[in-house]
Amino acid sequence: MPKRVKIKLVRLGVIKALTRLLKHRNASVGVTEKVLRLLAAAAAVEEGRSEMMVNGGECVGRMVRKVMKVSSAATEQAVTALWCICYLFREEKAAVAAAEAKGVEKILLLMQSHCPATVRVMAKDLLKIFKGYSNIITFEYQII
Image 1 (cartoon, helix red, strand yellow):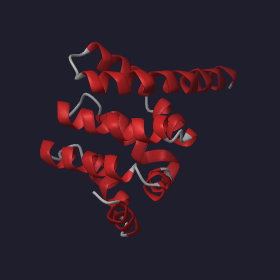
Image 2 (image 1 turned 135 degrees about the vertical axis):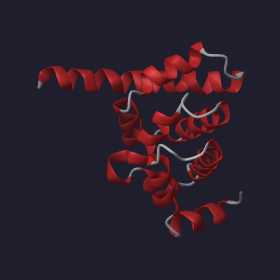
Image 3 (image 1 turned 180 degrees about the vertical axis):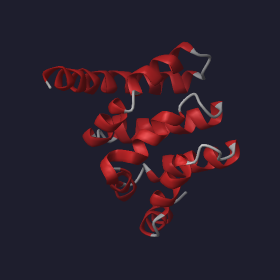
């Protein structure tokens, strides 16, 4: 998908609509896979990443929750989107939101499953990032 199309989709408010679709527990597998595929595409542009961080990174947290819950294709798309946001572009707020949504646990489970090698490599990269933020969140929790 060309960059200009991705930017236009973001400006039309697609990210908010896709986040709402991720909230629905009774959404079909096909719909969830397509939602995650669009979010992975939108994560490649700055406007898409910033829009995903609205409401404290709700979209990122929802993507983490969909890992290993819908299908292998949906898991692959969610990991791709998270990798693009958190590893490739180093969005700190997204990494914190993912760690708060138990991203470390999800990625560890994913790495123990029979996932494709490309997903395993992305999961390994994400684990390094989430683990650092997970320790910070745990430390803050213990202080309070």
